[in-house]
Amino acid sequence: MAGKVIVITSGKGGVGKTTTTANIGTALALMDKRVCLIDADIGLRNLDVVMGLENRIVYDIVDVVEGNCRLEQALIRDKRNSSLFLLPAAQTRDKTAVTPYQMQELTESLKEEMDYVLVDSPAGIEQGFKNAISGAERAIIVTTPEVSAIRDADRIIGLLETEGLKNPEVIINRIRQNMVDKGDMMGIDDMIEILAINLLGVVPEDENIVISTNRGEPIVLKADKSRAGLAFQNIARRIDGEELPLMSLERDTLINKLKRIVGLS
Amino acid sequence: MMSSRIFTSFTEDILKSKQSKRGVMIMRDAISLRVSSKGVIITLDPERDFSDIKSSLNRYVGEAGDFFAGVNLFVNLNGYNCLLEDMQELISGLSRFEKIENIYFINEKENTKYRTTDTILLNRTIRSGQRIKFPTNIVIIGDINPGAEVIAGGDIIVLGKLRGVVHAGAQGSIKARVVALVLQPTQLRIGNIISRPPDDSGLSEPLRPERAYVKDGAIIVEEMKL
Image (tube, rainbow over all chains, first blue to last red):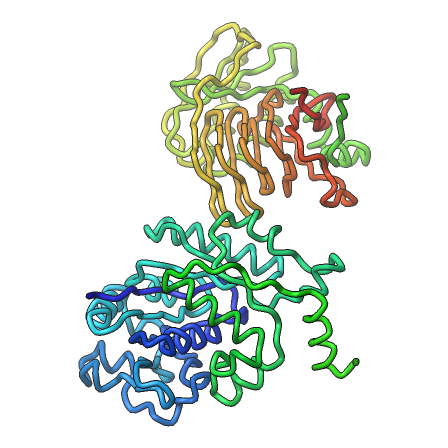
């Protein structure tokens, strides 16, 4: 049975596309799914670093489309999870090294072998973005509670609709409930009201993300210790079709937890 | 209770400063534009001096850019007695319109009650970066999000939240109106009047249908009775 190709995109940079891709991919693999992550950010590759697989890259996506190697040769098996694979981007080339058509062919052949193919889109709306979405049948938009990120997400939704990718879903990343409560940050309802699309999940701001990203260990591996990790795990379960209520942001305990992390109490 | 608020009007500011010719001319324009099924009709005001007509026309030409691309333009003399040299100046001014299809001269008495009757219906939300432009009325069932632009020759009706930029009466009709279930535009333009919500207006604006129209050269926003 053919798997699903899902693009993870945002328009704006720095909202957490790569972190989201790495964590959802890892979480799905932990659920015994066969998952392949594709880094479509050619020239600025990051997903391999976040996954801790940088030193295993021999071939990359450009080698595959140019015929320098077979697809299986370029796939890197994750060091912790035998059902998780990464197709890395090339670092020395740029977005024009791959065409949307080649990308489509690539995802077509990958989804034969996989349950899920997650494409990590680059920021922006240019060729890299067009490449990333060309093979996808489902889109996840990552945004943060900032007016500029919401504006870009809205633009992306419009572009996806034009490209025939209907009903994208949104993940709100890096929310800080204590700031929302004080009225200093946009709330979930405000954002969903503007974007008017299905909410796939909310990920609280978590310092552990920085640590895990730098170590190359996705935070879902420690979902029992991290709220962000738990949130990503829940998102993966929803992607797989489970009906799961939104994790309550448990205002008090979260604030206390943040305070504890910051060392205020 | 009906309440109304006045949007800050850019042209009003200009008028107060009395420095811009543009502001003064808006108050008493010597030409008017409207859209018909045949094309765009420019009607001269026969009561006015030719210099007024000429400067109004030049301003329109300057502002229009390629807005009239591919349409037929009809210049209605409207009973104005045109000298040969006036006509020549008129022609040289009109020829600066970009990409226009054909220009015709007609001489008909203007029916001032005219409104655009053609209407486009859009059943979707207009998102950031999208730009909708029709020389007709536009009805949108959905929202106009921040960063989106909707430009209509006639009225704009939004059955949803209006948060982007809208321009009704884009060919210069200040009789055009904007109606929205929630009216919180980034900028609202009617004819040649540009306005924006007052800076102090936060999220506490009424979530009720409102209507914007031009009265005495200013854009008035008025709550609609249900």
